Image 1: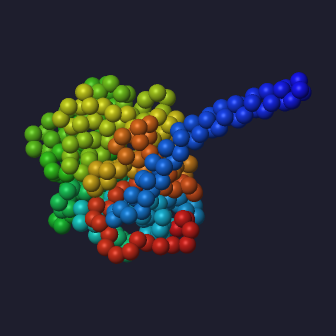
Image 2 (image 1 turned 180 degrees about the horizontal axis):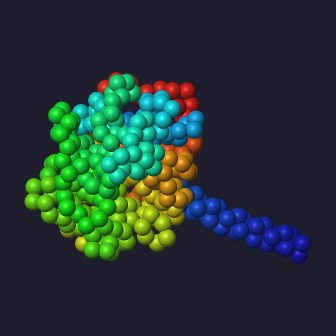
Image 3 (image 1 turned 120 degrees about the vertical axis):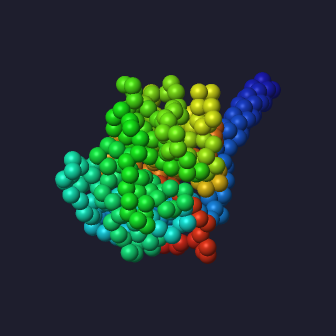
Length: 343
């Protein structure tokens, strides 16, 4: 009888233990798939999203301009050239691509040698044909009307009329200017400038010639990108031992800072989607954004909530990939299809 009671007691103890284990397992299963479900939902949204992404990919010993669907599928090599092609920027009508390359170059007029910080600026069709040199410089960006570009040349900000070829140096800054981005209304250019002892982000008004900050209190700022409506800016900041991404409202940058990334390393090249729903960016373990070396860059996607408050997914997981830029015009027809994910 005592043996039977002891056996029943052991059975009850085991049952209670199994019950607690089941509850614990269920609790962990409730918390863990929530992020997985969010990531799956984001990927599904991107699968149906009609805009594609341009980017630079290190392939066969050099950088190439590639294109992929918004969910990272259908990768296609566009430039297919033995030279290094980087930093693609789609025209507002989605028909041409502006990019930097070391295909040609010169070392006069105080420019850095090609392949370092002086590069040729080219345009080509969306399929990679008809590539033409338009200027000597780097970090080129389209004006919203598609008639002008701005770029850097020997540390100065240059505006060039595409049709006439007329160039004009704009602004009178204290020191080196970097990473320009034209506002959607065409009135101003966000940029990085070394002003009053600080390497910070500014908005330059092309009409008044005035500069104003777009971020405060988060270290040095760089690589700004206006949202499609022009109300917000996504940017990089050297912060907490790495480079993190932030957003700020243009009207009140002091009170509206929002941190997007927390992952250690260097988070660069943020670019808003054409409807402000997504932000695509690159992550790398070290800062080689100005070099032609491949590094270990990969492209990620998130919502403007950031990676701590919303889902984040990787779009590339092979080689080295960076400089993402949205194609502003919705693609007509079926998404691109390729064998595998590597171009």
